[in-house]
Image (cartoon, rainbow, N blue to C red; front, side, top):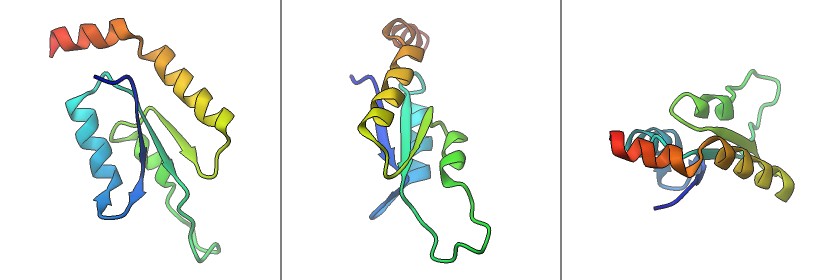
Length: 95
């Protein structure tokens, strides 16, 4: 059992959004932090906000790379504070 999942949205040979959705379906009480450093080559065209899009399938927090160790620790602490172990135990009993 684990307390938190951290995932990169764009990974080789994997679909980040699908991974977030499946993880959230299987473990909805476990918070997930999505991160991305994806940059567009054409900055003049409007680009989708992939980090915001990661919230819909189940990410609790998002971080844009590069991020500081402080930002990562703050996101982790926020997620763990919001999803206390008693919440996880309650969800397991209901599931």
